[in-house]
Each structure stands twice: as C-alpha cells, then as structure tokens.
Image 1 (cartoon, rainbow, N blue to C red):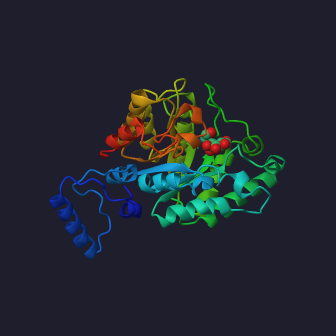
Image 2 (image 1 turned 90 degrees about the horizontal axis):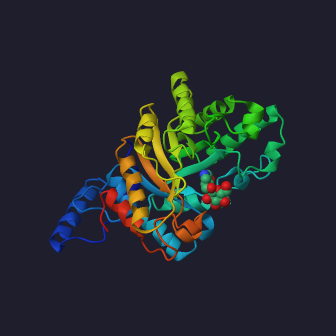
Image 3 (image 1 turned 135 degrees about the vertical axis):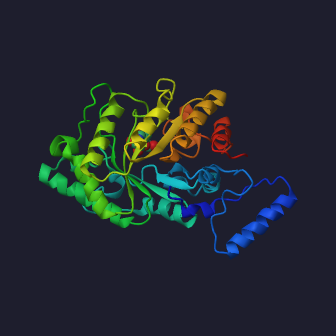
Length: 352
Ligand code: 9MR
C-alpha cells in the first residue's frame, strides 16, 4: 500500500480525551518531528475527520470539487478540513481544456490542483477520453485525425499535470447499460473501433508513467452484464500487458439503483485481477438513517478489500450536487454534517 505524504497534512483530532493524553501526544509528536518522522496518523486518538480517518486505514477520502465554489468560505473550509483528495468535477473534461483543437486552457483545473496541492491533498484526474462533454469538432474528424487528436489530448493534458495526479480516469463510460455487454457508440468507438481504449491507455502510460491509470464507469458496482464486460476488458489487458492500474466504480445510488448486495464481491473480483479499485463518484440519494446505513455499507466494503485504495464523494454539499434534489451527499446546504457523515466517519474508525 502506497501511503500518501498528505497524511502529514491531515488536521489533528479536535477532541482529546484528557489534557494528560493531549500533552503526551503532543510530546510524542514533537519527538517524532524532531526525528524527521512526518506521518503522525495512527496515534492513540481516533481521527475526527474523514481524510484523517481514511488515512489511518491507508486510504484517501476525497470529494469532487468545482472551481467556482472555492471562494465560498463554508465550501472551502469543509473541503480543507474533511477531505484529503480532490477530483475536478468538470474542469479537466475535454470541453473545458481543449474546446478548440490543440488550444489548451487549464485555468479552472489549475485552480483546483493548486488549492489541493497547497493543502497536501491528492488529486484525481477526470477524465481524458469520454463521449460526453466532448467538443463538436472531435466528432467531426475522420479516423486518422481523430486518433491523432485523442493521443495529442492525452499527451498535452497529462504532461501539463505530470507528477501532480495520483490517478487518471483515462477512459470513462465506454460500455453500454443493459445486458448486451457491448461498447457504447461514441466517436472513438465508432471510428477507431475496440482498440481505442488500449491505445488511450498506452499513450497515457508513456505521458506520465507515475500516474495510476484507471478505467471508470457507472452501473458496474455490482456483478452484472456491464461490469462483466469491464472485467473481461481488464483481464484481457492484464493478460496482454496493456497498462492499466485501477478500475473506478462511480457508485451513484438511489432507490432505483441501490447499493448492490454483491458490491464488495464485485470490488474484490476486480482487485483479484491485479488492479487497484477506487470508489470514484459516490453519492446516495436519501436522508437520515437509511442513507447513513447505505454509506456505511459502501465504506465497509472498500475497507474489506485491501486494494480498494480510496473513496471520492461526488461533491462537498447537497446544494451543489448534480442531483441536489436527492440530497445525496454528506453535508447539507449549510455544511452541517448529516447522519451519513457520522456513519462514514464511524465506519472509517474515526470519531467526531
Ligand atoms: O457532476 C457533473 C455535472 O456537473 C455535469 O453537468 C455533468 C455533465 O455530464 O457531469 C457530472 O459528472 C459526471 C461525471 O463526470 C461522470 N460520471 C457521471 C457524473 C454525474 O453525471
């Protein structure tokens, strides 16, 4: 398990049980700091934030971040206190960074990366090759031109962020929903054929060899035809030496699409192929105890799979969620901790 240096930046637990213990912990911290030891997580007290609690379990706990909200004090304070990983919610997508061919605009994404880095948070990169939020010019290219545009996009974006991104969603949502197990129609699929995913991963490996390269999708959270198709892709890549390091399970849940009973088993079967698994866009519609229990079950499933390296919730507060009416996140619109927050912290072994 690779431990992040961000652990040392996790806020210290706010509630100490006694002054004596507090003094002891501080004293030990001083000794360890003097000895050049920076990772202080794992001391006697339970962690009191999501990021710190996850770090004690060797995981990260992140949130999707929107650059336009970073100036709001409650938003920034919650992000900075609770999370130790950030994923730009929209700012690294193709239409945001390369709206015009080979002309790159990284301003909003840089804002998120700089915010995260200056606070010791990791950053997940989302996403390089996706059929959605794709500028029209891409779909208008012929096959040879499209291949070169795809590789140029991967190269330029990954080189810009080289060394700053711990995991990249190289290809996002390439499979159809339902029982077919087939690829989804997209300019990439339709013009380049099945090989576009392999080509994207090979290009990505060369562009930033240190970044973990992920395939990311939704409705693949349980064992079903769609996740079987992804499983077969990953198994084939591993067998042929095509670079792939992780699979992202978006985990957008609601009553019509509940947390599957075989969620943990599904994470485990992918991990057993020799890739990390990450929960990349978690949100669960609902409220109160029911929502809290669902969140708890997801966290416990990740902790039970040793190669489940981290969890990202798809936003900081319900009010800015892509489906705000479903109140799917851990903080309400006033940044008050919901029962789901306490359930997650407790499942991570922390205490508030
Ligand atoms: O949360 C994102 C929202 O702000 C955008 O309008 C939307 C556009 O497609 O994308 C949302 O994020 C998606 C993510 O990038 C990929 N998986 C599904 C997410 C929710 O739609």
